[in-house]
Length: 380
Image 1 (tube, rainbow, N blue to C red):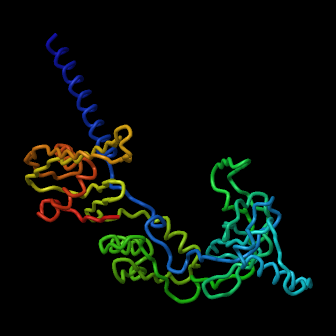
Image 2: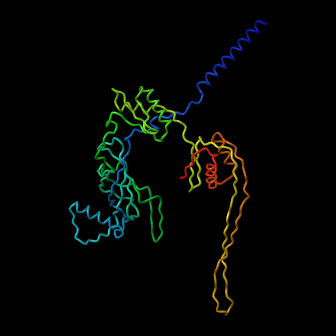
Image 3: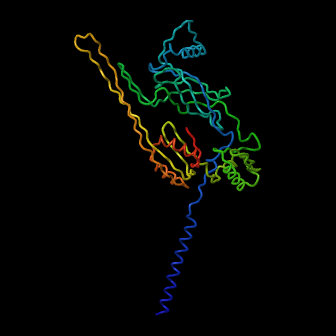
């Protein structure tokens, strides 16, 4: 009997040990890992970017909602120039009173590696005093880059996401009527040089300058492609030397898929003085300090007073106003804020003050000046 109990006890202990080891195994592999991001989300290739395009054109076919040509003489000049190019010569001194034409500015963005024949989306914005661009057609408009060269030609029917109506002095409007969009409204006519084949080396640019992140990215690239492939020039630019025998495209494709855990950012607090918004990141810490906060309110009440003269006195009625000003000041409270090593502690300490968001702007600036707030303040 004792032998049976002893054997049963050994089986139970063995079973418990197996469960313990299994839980430890799960604990090792289910521990939260450091947050890693793809390199394509942290950096860009130098020279691979969009280029802004701009053009001036005319929108025709409007239903009486175009520019008032008397107030926008440049619209009339543009019409004269367009008609002359088409062989239509108007007599000198002709006064055009048009209501279905509007001068517009056309904007778009030329993406990297764009080739002739590729289409682009464009935005058309009224330049004059047109009431609406709804139902209009954009005439052929050249789109130029910063160098003055034409890179695309735009034309097409506008799509305006608004509607408006007016009658007998009453007017109603939904959304914006002086801006429209044309999908695939421009055709690329000129391509840019390929930036990744212009030299033996390439530069990788971090979206946010950080020396620690630059070093981490450089180490990760060298571990994957070999030493001397990446060299951090500064806190933003990393010089790349592609391996011999590998195409640039395949090298960049492998490069973008590398996972890198970026370094912790600077402790920063963003203050919006217009809205009173306060945003802080998780690196913000707080040292022990004492804060005194009191509210001051000013109330001004103005009431009209009319002095009526007596009958047959030939006096005049006098209207004036009497103002009453009340100033209320709540007693200030001195609160001790304990040091906080993480963001939740800082939030709890600031909530203990009981200040409004507008008051919190001044309190945070005072705490920063006193040296108790470990963060960079940025006012936007």
